[in-house]
Image (cartoon, rainbow, N blue to C red; front, side, top):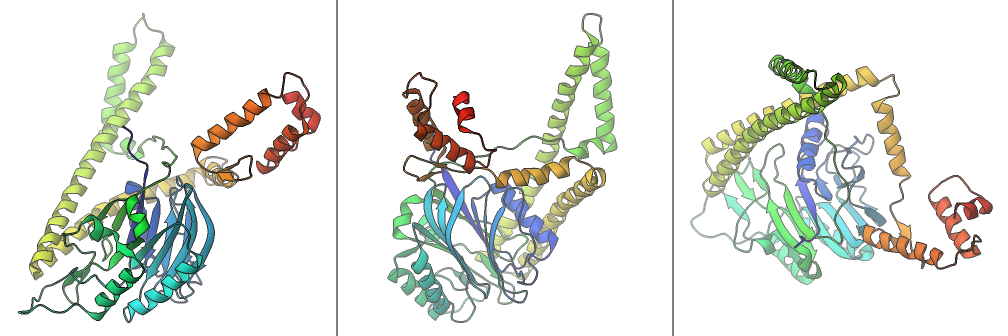
Length: 459
């Protein structure tokens, strides 16, 4: 039985993305999980100078920025998911972005917000008023709310008597009840307590990063998870929903160039080649066949070595993440200074490990620019690929002029169209409606114009 198609929403307060390391760390995490929609808060981007927040997987981005390096929210979309924007609102203060459109033909409204510390619910009501004016389809209200549901806080200074929840928590609960909005993480974890933010000043945990959906969208909710705090001071919130149809796209294998730089790796490769040619260079086998086959053997060797190195790196990374998770759990239960010190040490070690990946990426980038900067090679091809993607036809018009994005429906439409051409008869003449459809397709595809006799001859 095939699993249901799914898409993920990833929400994180990044606490500034003006440093290259933090942008690299963000895309490193995104390229691992590859969520369809990414909501970022507190990007600290400035209106006067907006850094490029795109990658090979996340080519579409929407931003709301302030005049200074403060606040700022962004929404990114994965290239394998077709998002068609029909309406949008961008807050000039850098606290709100609202997008209305379709994600793989699923009508959605995605709102990403960063609420102020003072009177957050007052701003939330104003923001939701703007959302209601233009919203359509399933609503996702994500962001840093700077207020918590009444039970999702943990302090290192327990009091003798239970404290009443703050006013913002009560107001948030009333707001959600008034508009039939639900906390997605709490729906998936009704009895669990977890947190997305740790305040070093107050030595307390809280769950202030939320995603609210309308009651009608709960049937599409499949899973909600809170990650661990690593390079930001917030933990990411990842939500999984049912999609209309799965994404498209596939990656390619490429050589890990570090395997031909290290002395031990080079020596092992030379030894492998010597053994290969010694064993296979016989009178029974043609020299050309031996030469061609050695390429496949060498590639298999590189794949094996690369996989071994990747497993060691992933094992070390996983061990650090597990240790950080354990320390965070201990600190959430019983906060203590020595646990916080260990957490800081483990996070620094993880950051040092990730910096090795960043350094390798920079070396590859410098090498590519040095070897291909003035040649018609890979860099030029990547630029041309971007131009080609801009002219890609993501949809098809059916007989009623409605846009179709679903691959299965596009296939059915092609089948119906060519079946109608076949039913026109075996004559060489083509009726005028068919000619008009072909000419309209050529114009839509931005192809060179072809005259009517040429079309008739092709058919």
